[in-house]
Image (cartoon, rainbow, N blue to C red):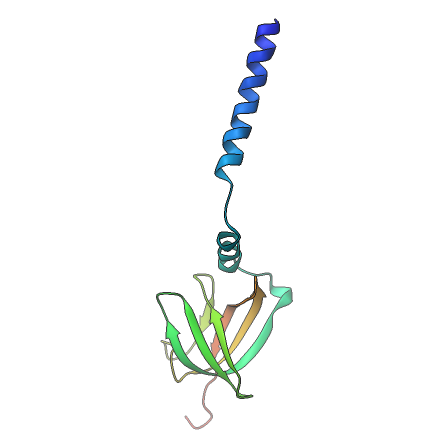
Length: 118
């Protein structure tokens, strides 16, 4: 019986050791994972302006706000893009709903503002 208890204790302890060995991640990996997750809707902020640059490889864009500030945003597959004339890109005037996640502005929704001249 004592042999069985020792074997059972070892069996239960080994997966815990293996599990902790596979969960170690750097702080940078954790921040990237957080930035890629869809943020909760209650903490959204907005910015409005013209998109000046889009980096599709890094999923980032630059916005020249109506206040003259340049802001960088990350986007992901969950980011909603609303436009009557896709694609939204450099030169598009937009409102971006975003959340600050791990120090990065993560776009939740990008909505093109239609020109009143059209």
